[in-house]
Image (cartoon, rainbow, N blue to C red; front, side, top):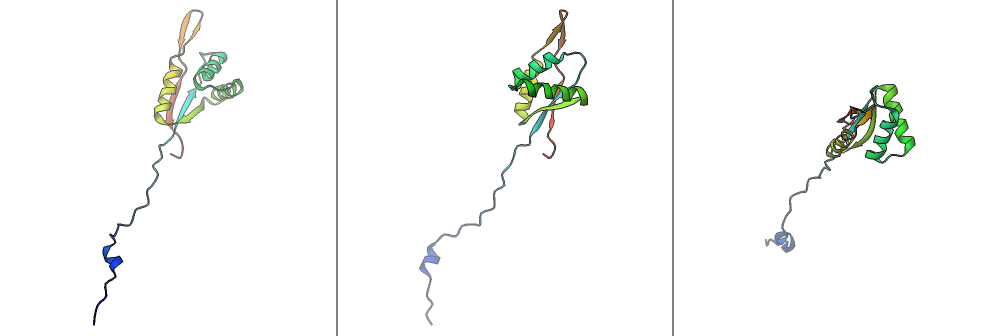
Length: 114
C-alpha cells in the first residue's frame, strides 16, 4: 500500500484561528450644570454659548432645566474633553456690583449605561 501525501496540505502553514476582536469603546461622561441662585440667567446663557457653541434657544433650554430641576446635562463626550469643558466653564466669572460671584457650578459624571 502506498500512501499518497497531499503536497499542498503538507506545505501550507496552519494559522491559529483568529479570535474575534472586540471594539473597546471609551465610556462617555456627562458635563452637568448645577443650579445656583447667585448667577443671572443671562450669564449662564452666555457661558453655554461661549464654551459649547450652542445657539441661544438651546442655552436657554439647558439653563431653565438646571433652574427647575437643580441640574442639567449640558454636554456628553470623553472624560478628557468633559474635564476640559468643566475647566473652561470655570474660567468665566460673573461680577455683580463689582464683586466676583465666581464660576458656575459644573461637574462631570459617567453617562448612564456606560
